[in-house]
Every structure is written in C-alpha cells, then in structure tokens.
Length: 131
Length: 119
Image (cartoon, rainbow over all chains, first blue to last red):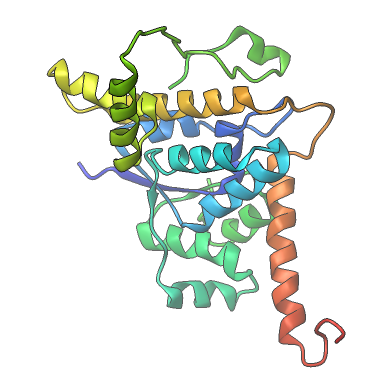
C-alpha cells in the first residue's frame, strides 16, 4: 500500500522541536512522522523558517544552531521543492511565493498541508488542500 | 512518539523527558576517533554511538520512530544548554506568519520602480 502523503509547514514543526509554554499545537506531527504508512513532505524553505525561529526565540549559539539544523535534517520529513511552474500558478492566485511553495508541493504529492498559519490555511482551504 | 510528560499539562516543555544520560569511561584517543568518525558521517557523537551500537547488536535498521526519537532527544539536549525562555512570547504561527509577510513585502517593494531604499 502506498504511504499516505502529507505536507507540513514550519508552524507545526516549531512546536514539535522548540516547544514553549503556551505555544501552538503540533497537530499530531509526532505521530505522523513516526507512522510507516505516512510520507511527510516539506519544501526546503521549511528548514529556513524553523532556523529563523530558533535563532530569534532561543538565542542559540552558532555551535548549537549548527547542531540543531543537523538534527532537524534527520527528522523523517522528506524535503523536496515543488516545480517552479506549480509555485507560479499558486502565486498568480495571490499567494506569496513562500506560501505558494507549500501549496504547490501539496498539489504535487497529493496530500494536505498541516499548518497552524491561519493565512496559509485559508488560502489552501479554498482548494481543499489543508488539514 | 514521545511519552506524555506530566508537566506538559502545566504548559512547561519537557526538555529532558525520554533522554537517558549515561556516564561511560572511554580512552581519550578512542573518544577522539569516535568524534572524528561522527563528524565525518555528519552525526552527533550520541547519534553515531547509537548507530554503531545498533549495528553491533545486529538489530534491524532503526524505524522512523526510533530515528525521530533520537533526533528529538538530541534537540532537547541542545535546548537544555540554551538560556530558558522567560515571559510571554509570540506563538510560533504568528512568528512565522510575520516572517513570511515581511519577506513578501520586501519583494513587493523591490518590484515597484522608484520604491527602493533611498541612496
């Protein structure tokens, strides 16, 4: 049986790896990435967004940030960037290219986007791509 | 998947939950070789030792859950070294939304002729 695809954005990964009191829910991402019957995807921009939050929020040293991203890369999330023409099509609907990369990847792999970002979710809801 | 931590209900992150710290005596030169091998394979010392131990034990390749558990344990170790978070902070989604909007605004501004930074 083909694993069920899902796309995750940084707003769900951050609460999983950089938890803080009162933070967002990670929406069951911990179970999804462990599930052998699920393939979790993210565009490479997700790592940059998580790195940004880590640097701003936690004041990690250079060595700590490097170790953090080395660990982050090993989480069982498949990084793959969508085709640029797909990103362009979503951008033409008013999304920034950054948001469009999640939408385009979702359409490409055929799975919903798991996100806490209301703006992205509303845009995806119009096409039934959020979860 | 991580075990539930009793403090989670109180809103405190469980930075050390599920991590077993062990004190192992190793020859200094052996430790240097371990660190060099770990660095060469892009792994932390803990991850490298875990992987080699797994091999030595003849076990099956790690499951996704085992990989993630190891990764999250390493991240918790890193965060345990970092300064604690005091006071309220912006929720992750808001922080990320703001970054995304700032980037998009910068691109918008640079796309409008004559709207760039003053010389």
